[in-house]
Length: 195
Ligand code: MN3
Image 1 (cartoon, protein in one colour):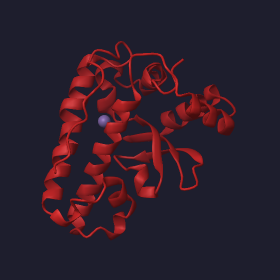
Image 2 (cartoon, rainbow, N blue to C red):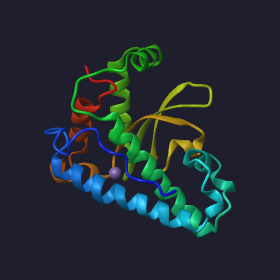
Image 3 (cartoon, protein in one colour):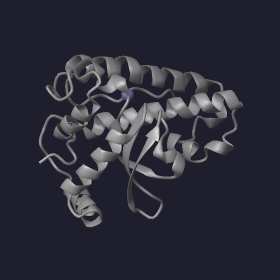
Image 4 (cartoon, helix red, strand yellow):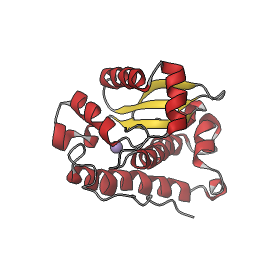
């Protein structure tokens, strides 16, 4: 079975003015679609992997039974597909908060605001394209870090909880070179921690 784009639970203009409708439309309809198409194309060559879950494949990346060239292509596009699935899911127009996540974050980082500050600094200082992540490691410990390109936390055996897209295509139409402003405003649409 082929993978598909997830259905958005909000319209392209729902995250205005923090994320503009045109960026949403191109990001979802073009960029995400391309990762998806590439992923489906490469997987067609390997029907024996059809029943494997993508996070499992990424976690066992070095051992995937694929040509070396296809492996890299698979890693980039499976990562791009999964990363964006999460990105759309954790955003939304309504103010709401996931209380259990907020408590875990406060226990680890002192407060949700302190976590946001740390995460923001890490995202701002990430060089080039990539993502800022809050993940859980194998023991369930929260960690923040950034990864380049479309690398997925699943490749490290980690479960992604919050992912912030730092590629220019995520913000350039509205923010141009002002990545810090995009990051600051993005907290307004992160429905997991928006209060
Ligand atoms: Mn993107």
